[in-house]
Length: 78
Image: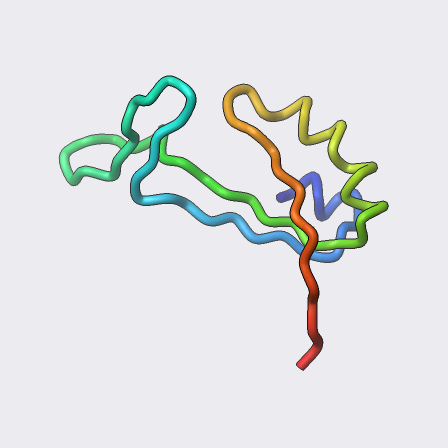
């Protein structure tokens, strides 16, 4: 998220998951008696298609395990 802000993208939100699994099929959960440093996270970044496309190489450098998806959305102002 900080890198997105530094690069001047329009907005970003980080969401922390309560439960999930990935490519290795290992379940990650937030149990009370466990340090949950491996919980899934989702970072949503909103900007123009061009800005997102130019930001993707920076994302690829950071992601060690996981994936990045790009979705087309319609943003409506209030």
